[in-house]
Length: 465
Image (tube, rainbow, N blue to C red; front, side):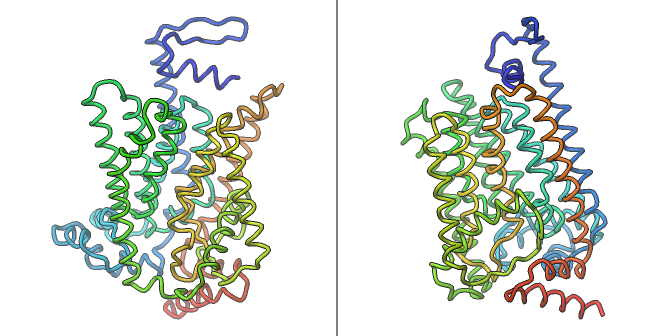
């Protein structure tokens, strides 16, 4: 019950905050409560930011990687020469690198302007944006729900998990951290828009416009944000509960501008990837095999979340999965989906978290197969937030009545955080250089399909001779 009491004391919806002392409850003046809560929130944000930066600080000693870092930064004259009007125009017009993400290009140009081709500066930018993202996860969920400690737990699971290493430590994956930064700003603006509904019309329009602007900037960082309009609909159900204040048709109409932008960006990205031949490598793969790989991928990502062992920069696609594995994965996904739907009135947060996880993976789950990879750690950067929500939020209900609940939860939470920190810093070491990275990838993907890591390892060994 301690968290609920803390929420009551800090929630802006409560007119008379209460300090619970165990033996008595004392009313707190509003101005003192606001000051204490703001001070505490700021302190939590600073500690979270600092911890994430420290955990990923070994990345500062890693080099550029031969794959993608060379093509996107070192050997791309529009990027390595820094910011200029000509380079900016190129960033908004080019589809040469299989995608359209002008803000991603501009961020790399800005790094080259400050750090030239010294890799530590480029790594530092990735780390700082990821740390900001971790803070934003906490701030956004705390704003939407009023729950401090559960929001912090979701932020810790997101920010410190070993699956984040690929997105943060691989410089060319700047698009991951940058796009989520604008994703979270979109949710923050939308949460404020929901709060201002039925109030001053000017503020409602202002925050809706801000949400649309941040979403546009996110799409210009990475096309994976195309699922965000559907996530907004989930948040309308819980925790914002706008469906109670507005009709379903109105909520759908409000998402149309977001949906139009998403469709346009998705079409541009798909055409760019087709033009670059990224869909040709396994273009003959039957849709049944693509669906099978998608179902198994949902389960594999969950497995790697709970047991992040044998992480690799590349997971070869087997082509065809055994039917019993596909059926098992399908039953698992369907079973969890049906369960959260049945529990939606009692535990709406489980439905939101689960379908956040399923939905945000759709663009990269393999229904449109790119190259010959089956899954990728970096694809979990946004989806894992929903899965963390799915896991963390029910704990309050499930542990209700536990005698030593605070102590037990503290021990479990600390153990998980320490395990994540140790494993994350260990995994960062494999990104130190190309040979180390691909030798590890070849070692942990031992099967008849892992010619890709061996080819990459042979290439980097040849180029370094």
